[in-house]
Structure formats: structure tokens, C-alpha cells
Amino acid sequence: MFLSESQVLEIVYPKTAGLRGQRFTQDTPVLPDVWILFGTDPGKFHDLLLTPHNLSSVEKLFCALKTRTERETAGAGNAERQFKLSYNETHVLFTTDYAGLIRIVLPVSFWWARQFQVGPGDLNAALDVLHEQTDLVELLTDPTKIPTAKSPTAKSPKAKSPKAKSPKEAKPSLLTQSVLDMVRIVGCIGMAQDQVSPLEVNVNDRTALQRAVRCIQQLLENLEPFTPEALPAQPPLWNVFSDRDVRGAIYRSRLAVKADAAVKVFELPAKDICWAVIDSGIDATHPAFLVDETTVLPEEGSFDHLTRVEKTLDFTRLLDLTSITIAGGASAPSAIKGISKKQRTAIARDLTPRLLKGQPLDWNLLETALVIPHIQGGKNGYEPPVVDHGTHVAGILAANWKTNKTPLVGMCPDIRLYDLRVTDAFGHGKESVILAALQYTRFLNANKGRMVLHGVNLSLSLLHNVKSFACGRTPVCDEANRLVGSGIVVVAAAGNSGMGDHSLGMANDYR
Figure 1: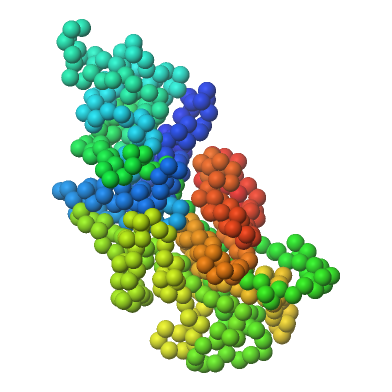
Figure 2 (figure 1 turned 30 degrees about the vertical axis):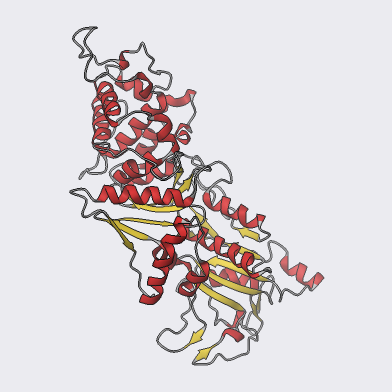
């Protein structure tokens, strides 16, 4: 790492910002955890979740980013840069480097349009003036020092006479405190991107801040302004989140919620209820989930009628299925293994027209590529998940394994299950994949005329910087609320181990 997390936090949350608090970056579309991601792991491409403005839409944001990315990669020296662009019903997914974040993403945001109502030349002139200011450190670190029309910031100190206009004269309205905050953040983190040795950034050092100003100018060199063209004038981007990593979270559950007592007292059957387990996967061949636990599964052929796991879908394939890779000024469907050429062609052919019409994902088509058939034997025979976390979770909910030496009975031993896999063979996943699985459950109920799924379980943990989000307003929280609004019960891990740490940083989360 070329910048430590504490260094990035000092850049994002300056110590002198006490009068304004530590959430001023919420005025910008980029959340603090995104800056931390690029600052602590520089020079790489990272996965981002982009939220469209409420007066725009997913398809308008997707098209704007696609156009800008194609133009950006068409230039000389960009042959090695490969961007990936995808979407779901509520977000656009964009894999980008730091320059792409600044040059492609930020200019299509509502924040950018509000702050930079000028041409690129005016902005560059303003940065030239800022670079020469004697009070540069105070301007970029002291939130009480706001430039005004009378401030020397408004005119270059190199002007030879009051009557002669300096070529570096800039509009004072550009140097608002919000813009100065962004100059410091974008510039200081930008300096770390191409460093080959550890970088010491002192935000109170004039030389370092002058380098940050020049870094901004390099990042914005020959920047093409956002032109809506056929799109509405409203800039389509609102927020930029990191696509957070997912991991399993579990603890003793059945006894804690008194499910054993409820079963004994009420003896309510659950055979007509179906629940989705969004996790690493359920072993549908496990005796705990068979319709009759004494049943012997066939060596070959379907076992659909012998297991209470109704369907298995692998959502870890989804991002590749729905994404395009942009490089060299052109777009192409992203490559993916394990999918027939016919399926891949059909999905790619369906994707763009639906997006341009503002239609959601075609789950009927995607389901055929995501489903894992319950068939034993053969070249593509069923294989249980590598990570057993999902099977464990499903056992708490639905196990009925009375023939075991120690009988294991879940909360609802006759309930039916959907296995929606969102983590890979190493137990790793992304928040965007969870969003897609939740949206799929809404699709099932909305298009079948009945409740196919009555609830979902999310025994998962996402790294969560509590200073980056309002309570309950992360992307996955918003999607869970939509699901509840459609009549589906959502059960989620809510901090099995309590608060992780009281200090600032990514460790400051509920685990």
C-alpha cells in the first residue's frame, strides 16, 4: 500500500475540519470508502456501484458511461486499459481505475454539473491561480477560509498591472470550499496512483499540496465535458459506492430465537412455504434436505423430486453475463467460462436493446444460464458447493436429519428452499451480486401470479464504514426494503459479534 488508511482518512477528514464535522465528503457523489479503496490500493481497477439521480435512470447512466468510456479508451496510450460496465435494476456496475473515476464518472454527476458551470480552460486557469497562492495550505485545509471576490485567490499574483488581464485569471466562484476539498482529496490520492515507492503525504505541506494541484490538472487534461446529446439535460449520476466484499456470518440461532419451543407448542407445518438462502450454496444432496432422509439418490439422472431444495442458481456468473468490456474505443460482451456460445450470444443480443428501452434484466433468459441442474452423473453433473457455510445456514432453517447420531432439526424441518449462490469457492462475493439475487426474488413473485418465495435469508457480513452511510441506507439495505415492500420477509445477520472497533476506519463496523 502506498498510502495507509490513516493517511487517506487524514486527507478525507482533515483535523482542522472540526467546525464542519467529518461528513463533508457526503456533498460529493463519491463516498469515503471509495477514496480509501483507491488510496490504500492504488494503480489498480476497482469495482464500483453507481446510483442514478432520481430524475434520471439506470439506462441513461449506463449509456452516458459507455459513451464516455469508449471515447476515453480510443485515445493513444490507452490500449492496455480495460473497463467493465454492467447494470441491475437499481445500479450501474463499473470497474475502473482512478483516472476513469475522475475523468469518466465524476463529470456525469449532478455534483460536477453544479460546481463546474465553466469550460475546461477556466477550470485549468483557476487551478493555476490556486497553485501560486501564498495561503494555499490554509485554503485547502481550513474550512473557515472561504475565497471571496475580494480574495487574492481570484487574481493571479503574476499580473503586471491592474489594467492588464492575467492569462491565469479565474472566476472566484470556482474556488468554493467544496471544490477546494475535492482538489485536496483527488490530488493527494491521485499522487499515489503511479508511485513505485511508499508515499508520504502531508496535507499541511505546501509543496505536497502544490503537487496535488498539478496532479489534478494532469488528470483533467483534455477532459471532454459531459454533453447530454440525446439524453435529458439532467446529469444521470448521484452516488458512487464501492462494491463491497461479502463474507459469511453465522452463530447459534435455533435455541436463541426459541424456535424449538415454538415447534413443540404450535406444531405448525411449513411444507407450503419456500425460503431463499442467499449464501455460498446449499448441498441439495445432503440427507438433511431430502424429502425422505432415508432415500438413496440415484447415481445418474434427476433428483429434483427427492430434495426440498427446489432450485439452485449461481449468481456469481451474473456480472460477466450482463457486462460489456470496453477497451480501445470499442465495446464487446465480457468473456465467461461454462456458458454455451448460443446462450452467451442470446444474452448479449438481448442486453443492449432492453437497456436502451429502459427495461429491466430479462430474468427468464438469464435464469437458464444461472441455474445448476439437479442431475447426478454426466459431464455437467451436480456438484455440492465448496464452501459449506450456506449448507450450515440452510440446516438451521430447514434441516430434518433425525437419523444422525445427534439428530439435527432446523426451525422449519419441512420448509422448501431456493439456493441462490452469491459467493465463490473461496467464500468471497460482492454486494452487487447480492443485489441481483434480491431483485431476482422480486421477479419470481411478480411474474408467477403467486408467492413463489415467502422470505430470504442473508447470513452475510459486509465491511461497513459507519461514517460513510446513513443508518440503513447502504445499497443492500435499500434493496432489502424494496423486497419487504413487495411482501417478502427478509432475515439478515445484524452484527453477530457486535461493534468491531470504536476507532475511525473500515474496522469500524457491526460484524
